[in-house]
Length: 148
Image 1 (cartoon, rainbow, N blue to C red):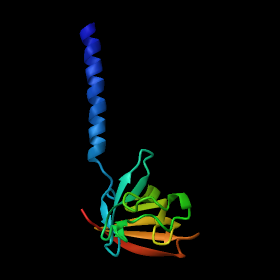
Image 2 (cartoon, helix red, strand yellow):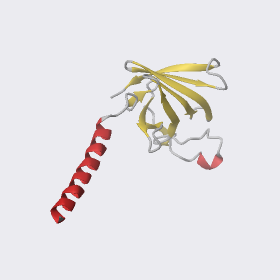
Image 3 (tube, rainbow, N blue to C red):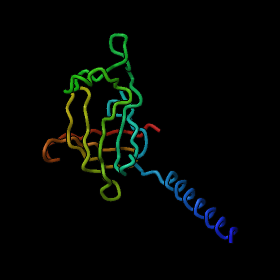
């Protein structure tokens, strides 16, 4: 009887580990590192614990300003203006929409300190990122390129 219980515990552990490893292997097509349109920055897109997608700046072509690391000087929250741009989360809360789309997210632009509604669409090795206010009809699309 003790062997049967031990066997069940081992089987349960193997099942849990197997499902964990398979989830690592099944990264979503958007989970990559992307160059912004100007190729002045790289953004790593990843899935959060809430199953939504996020993106943070992991590389800047010019990481310094006046000899010091760039900070988020245009942030509307004065307390956050000393936070470094490297590591800054600029994409938040995206949910998958169909085979190639992601919607209901926000994009933060550290150049002007504004946050916009956003949707993204994968087109091969390109990512169309559309930021907008109100309706997506009134917005701007930039094309990001896979960097990895």
